[in-house]
Amino acid sequence: MLLARFGRRIAAETRIDSLLTIIAEEVRHILGADRCSVFLIDHDKHELWTKVALGVGEKVLRVPMGQGIAGFVAKTGSAVNIRDAYRDRRFTQDLDKLTGYQTKSLLAVPLKDREGKALGVFEVLNKSKGPFNDEDEGFLRILAAIASSSIENARLYENLRRSHLETIYRLAMVAEYRDQQDTASHLRRISKYTAIISAQLGLAYDLVEDLRYASPLHDIGKVAIPDAILLKPGKLTPDEYEEMKKHPVYGAKMLEGAESRLLKLARNIAMAHHEHWDGTGYPHGLKGEEIPLEARIVSVVDVFDALTTRRVYKGAWTMDETFQYMHDQSGRLFDPAIIDAFHQCKPQIEEMCLDERARDSQEATA
Ligand code: C2E
Ligand code: SIN
Ligand code: SIN
Ligand code: FE
Image (cartoon, rainbow, N blue to C red; front, side, top):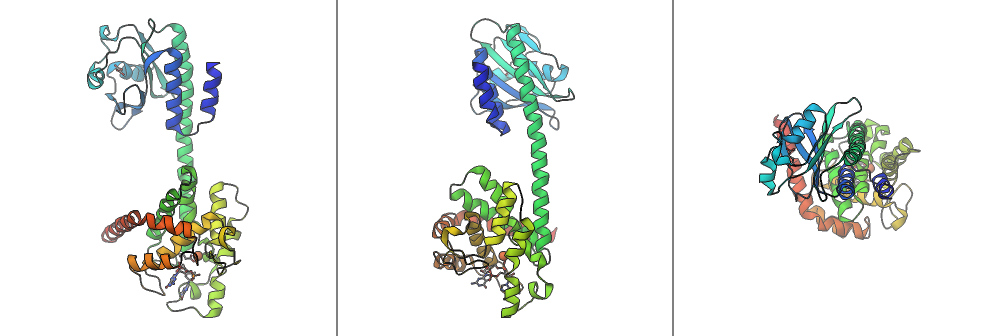
């Protein structure tokens, strides 16, 4: 019964912090323990730190490797079950002194990866009735195995996701490389503006993160535009502009049929980031909510960034001029709801621009 509920709770959870917290909460509940902590090993600092510490407030507890019961368990890989911690020489009262707590019974089992290498320690304190027994220990070992494989999976997943996102970013760099001297910071700004506005619009965290990484691909189709047009220092002729206006369709073709949500968003953004709210944009003349939300957001971000930075064909506008222009174009080029969110984020956006400029000049002198 308890285990069934527990199984459902962890199956629904993919983020490692919430997952470990749920595991710790259930363990504390099922074993009737007062406190429950998950310690992880920090190899660089040579210490254990609490990833989760229930019943300790917000504090992160740290123990040097090899010290205390937790340190002993991490080092030796064997479990420890004691009735009265203060009578065990391995126990250190340092943490109790820090938290104003008195440990009595204590059960601690190691967390190990697939190869048996120590990851950390799972510890419960002060059982409400009597000492921890063998059954409690067996149960904690099973949960420790689940927690260990979750930690390992989360690390593998994190690594995979990071390499995936890095690849996407570099793909975007390839597309913009010819076009701008400051490709990297341009893409960083596009990412950050998009995330700031999307969060302000109240979109879910995971969607905001996908948009953060999908947005830099909006101009991927520009790789198919000839240098003579893309790099032209002056105004484009009508024919040249017609050619340039194909970049959304080229980009969408490159991303067509993608299966991940992130790349599907990127495809919609590539296709529709030059559509206008009033239907006067290209390539399809879509109007209002016919334009996917993700593309409406990036269209605001794209124009804002194009205006506030220098291009081969134009100088940079000031922040205030640009905000004024964006405001004037609300309901014409842009979705009014997104322009509202954009204006609410003005302080964050300005601050981010200053940070980026400082970073650029640092990189330039480095
Ligand atoms: P981009 O430079 O990144 O500009 C993106 C969008 O920002 C433009 O889409 C436009 O909506 C807005 N924007 C950029 N500069 C200005 C400006 O000076 N005034 C105003 N009001 N809006 C501006 P658009 O016009 O569809 O252009 C798409 C892309 O075509 C541009 O991307 C750029 O790569 C190229 N492009 C547009 N006009 C010219 C031009 O006169 N010369 C050259 N060499 N390229 C141009
Ligand atoms: C110890 O592992 O020695 C102390 C653990 C604790 O108080 O949480
Ligand atoms: C960019 O190169 O910064 C975006 C241009 C566009 O949207 O066409
Ligand atoms: Fe574009």
